[in-house]
Image (cartoon, rainbow, N blue to C red):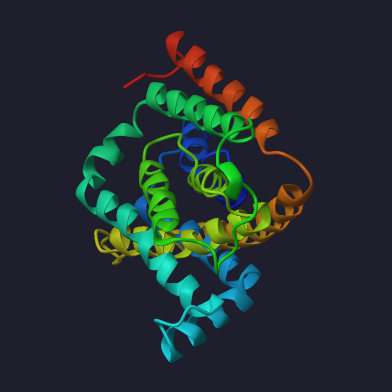
Amino acid sequence: MFLGILQGLTEFLPVSSSGHLALAHRLVGTSGTIVFDVGVHVGTALAVAVVMRRELVSVIRGFVSAPFRKDGSARLGILLIVTTIPAAVAGYVFHDLVEQAFDSVALVGLGLLVTGLLLFAVERPGPGGARRGSVGVTQMRLWDALVIGIAQAFAILPGISRSGATICAGLATGLKREFAASYSFLASLPVILGAGVLEATSVDWSGMGGQVLPLAFGMASSFVSGVVAMTFLLSLVRRRRLSGFAYYVWAVGLAALAWGSRGLWPLG
């Protein structure tokens, strides 16, 4: 339940779920399993489907009925496809290298520091130019979607927050604040499901009976905490800046580096 709650909260808050899970496994003395990772990702995917259900239904209807019209729903479907491509390619090509990278607490700590820099920098004057904070789905360009997709691809690295990277990229390209957060959530769905499918194909599902109950608790807690995190962030992004999260991830990143340097766990 603890790891499921952590996954749900940190998947959507801009603080890096993968980095927090890697540190949490070491802190509580557990080892991550592919089966558990698949389960909690399914839970967070369900959370996206529930919170963003209206947008998802609109995208599906618009994309199926008229994929090349420039109305909001059909265009949003095309933009999401463009955003998904870089992360899908990077995840498939560099999957093994990324898995190894998560064994290094030093890399997780450094990734968290980079996440903090992104969150802090995006709130400074400059990014987005004249378009800053004015772009909705009908004004969003394919180039904007690609930039967000590239940011999402870099977030496969340990400690780089996927939601943080995509929201920051969205704000930097001029997206409205609330739309940048909503777009980030929608863009997470194919990535989360794709990662789950990729991991599931490498699992021997025979003899999994003993893991059913822990897996169920992990999925349920990641779903509930994911819904809470998305609702909270949508509310927060309307009213306040994201730079407050920067100080948090800097603190966690520095703590991870300090902890590792003292030999309390291997740096990898």
